[in-house]
Image (cartoon, rainbow, N blue to C red; front, side):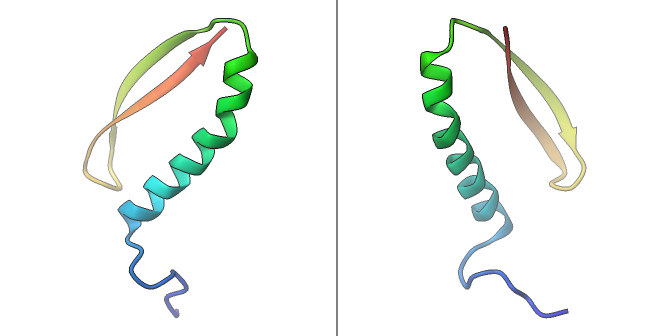
Length: 59
């Protein structure tokens, strides 16, 4: 199977870029919404072999 990823973009770089785009899209919605509680959860991600933080907004 051919590698279709752009040159110089690693898996970690792709995930960081994806998260940045997602948070930039969500920022205006969060800014105008009423205050919400943030819940931070740590989970073990087997694909990266490390703990990962998941931030959820609870209204």
